[in-house]
Image (tube, rainbow, N blue to C red):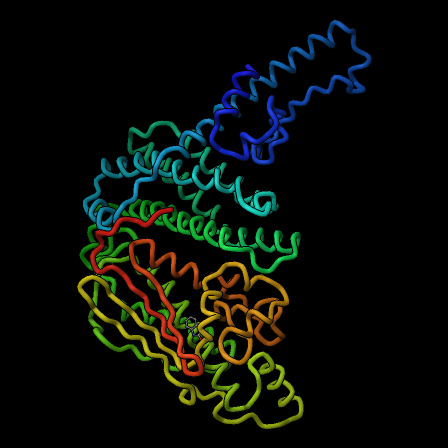
Length: 484
Ligand code: W6P
């Protein structure tokens, strides 16, 4: 039995696993047992066993060994299921396919949808499970990364062990399982960010190199795809057939996709929210003007578009406010909140323009309705970014770092306020205390959302003047998921 296990391990493809010493004290593998840690050690010198007769002790040992083998065996079977799934390729789906499929859903087709996910999700999860075990710099060993790994293993197990889906009842039960999984994964982005902070603390480096960046791009893109598939499935199940028909007729919605996604509307929503945030933070917010082909509509996931436009608009707002104030007051951006506080403490009157929206240059959102792409340009006069600092905006590794003013201050003009805006890094002074943007992953994640269905997101900067963000989205929904 043990030989079978170790042979299988020898031939297994997951390098970190195969690299374990063989024959295997499996309980030493950090990832192997996640929540159900069963202790199978044979404590032959356990004090309690000294009073037993030699005979019974042997029996006990044999029994324990048998138990150990059974545990090894079920672990081994599970591990093989993960590896087997990981050796399969994912099946990319186009937005159109998701849309068309959900358009005429009968209970029967919903069962088909569940069957597809029952097959597909373990593959997508298993790729991440294996990858999470083989990260560079010992990132796999960080507690938060292990937590995420455990979450993926548990989710894999729940889906993998769910029996074959045959009936509508099975479909509903399975959908509940997916709902639970999606919720439990809500904080994975933050948990991974935490894991990276843990690693940085341990190795004392700020920048972690392109390997990690690429891993995180793959990891988050995969996460977006899994959440898209589950989200669509849940949205279809949340309505009765009659309600689904109505949603389609009145708003063009099929699940979370609509054929009438209107960038103008989404940009208005995103601007409203960004304005609230900016007002809270600065007591003022630049105007947003929407121009171009205002009646553009196309098939897309409005929640994704919202997320991207919100990120871009709030970045533009922040850059605009900070640059304008800094220029007119002649105070570096990172000293601004302190400067204003001191003025107030000294009883000085703050200038009128400071809290007047109209004193700040407008942000322009231009919608272009092309054949191939719908392109949305978000254009600010927020002082721009040195060209050399642009790549940093796409990285996951710097905003979370402490005391990295050298990096942040090279971004966005004369003073620090780089990052995905509205998320003061720990190094930033008092004043900006909001945490709305979490860990400053907004920009790199937005690019992944754009790329997911074949679009892209680019930034162009006119240093000293402003920044233009170009968001490209495929006009036709035929593009299949871009998957890692
Ligand atoms: C800036 C920095 C930035 C990032 C993303 C979008 C707009 C802007 N403006 O100054």
